[in-house]
Length: 639
Image (cartoon, rainbow, N blue to C red; front, side):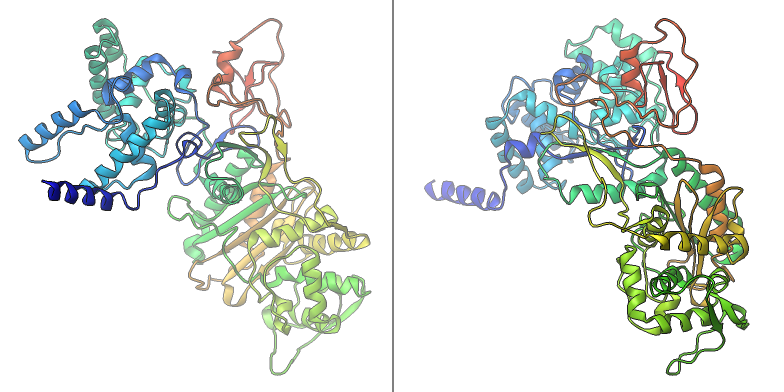
């Protein structure tokens, strides 16, 4: 007998040898990075949405009763493990010859979701039980339930009931009706199978099962259950950001996650993303690829738009985020071709050259390397302005040799280009790879008249320990002014658009930029700006195969122009928004900035339920009872 006990004890110790028993913070203070656009709309990432947690006591009683009735009706009565339920499940499973029932408590489900793998083994179940006992000993039932409700997966990328309420019904969790609460609670067991977006009938049937469980648990009358069944919940897509914004959200999330503790609670981030511009950028890229992509063998494109201070307002990382999450605006290293010539000519200006000075455009041979002009034509002596506007390779290489490649590299660094640069003659023609974001930031320095410009996506941030939002990305440390070189560089870039290789990018108002094409048409670029925005566009193929004659002045310039013609001025991110939903607080929404909004004509007297409108619309403005959908003008809230 002693031997058997010893064997069992040894087996138990072996099973628990690598188990981590979590701290209270790991259960209740898990980091949630909540991103919103400049005007307060929630942003998801990789199809995942998780909002700041809401205390269980602030959630509707019907929701709590629905969850407990269907998942663990004796939660507040038993300890970490509900032994009668376990025994019933074992009996049912033995009778069926397979697993048909489970006896896991809310605490055990929470442990499985947060700390263990989904594998069904006795070892995992023992670990689950041990950690559950530990958690129940250190945390209250209310704290455990709150963590569970905010961390359970509920289909379509929604984690937690606050996110599910927003995703499926476009409202705060505190406003869920009984049919809605029953439908969401029913999804816990099989979130994909009972997802109302995928199978509404299955979701309604499961909701009816939940309502029956509530009646059986004496948490709901038969009449109320019948009324809820006769008027089931009708999910409708929430007013969330377009899927293409996920590239931007991934970029910002990664930066925030790298500097915030994993168990530091909620981190709220107001980003610089302008959803109207994001949609325009997405449409510009997709429509141009749809129209010319197959003909020109151009399968991918990327676009990044920023204000002159580096605040990124739109980012498209490819043709389709659903097909590929690879962000070609941030991650792809490609040859910029003639778009790099900005640095050659900036170096020349700093060495005393002027745009009116002449340079010989004739064949060049540098230790056997012979660059060629596009079309293999030469023009003899030309001004620097004309050589730049017409992107003459031989003239530019000759100029870079006179200035010195080291000086070209120094000029690129001073304008903020971070990418590795090879000190060789071909660098003058853009043979060292760069990212679209990095190159566009350097052009932003020209528009701003000071360098470097830091490309950023975070406007303001608030951690769990902060009382107010803290503004991020003020004046860049170590910036230097470009002085008279700014005007000269802008004149050179204007020449490209007005009478050079970038004429396809001409706008009715001021525009300046530069085309770029790498060898064999593998990469095509247009980087430029108007008075409000600096925008970079890249077109190419992921496998580096050549396109059919695509140059920077064709598809990239057209995408750039298509976007710029509709863009206008970007929305400025609000840096001190109102308090959003949090654990233990009311479900109040974030208000949007008033920048650039056209409000409805004010009227006398109250016209809406301010409290309800604040909960439903993050962009709600109480002064005129209006909210702003990301795709149009402000509208009256009629709730």
